[in-house]
Length: 136
Image: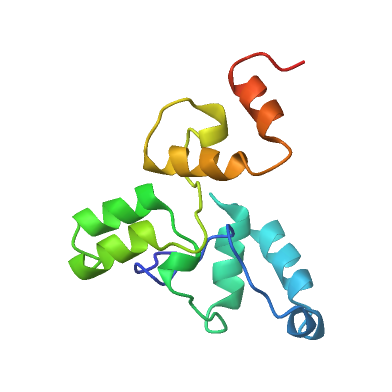
């Protein structure tokens, strides 16, 4: 199935009406869909196929993947005036692409931001040790 930009959700950040999903037995439909067809991204593709027409699309800043977004921006699919706001005012960062910041020492904008927040957690030292190959 081909989707237009902004017409496809990923499963990185979801807000779901669980009562409606239960009432409509959507889970059973998802399972049946998964049995009938092979998908490249099963969780996302099934969500999009089954829930089409019942999805409220949130602004991109709630599931912001800079690398994927930048490709859309370069193709002219994102207005230039939105570029700065999205890059610096994202609500939820989605590390869709590899390598993930916790697996790579490359210092770019998003990796640095991730490590800045990681320092605020009780897991910082173990994450850092794992990255540096010093984990148990």
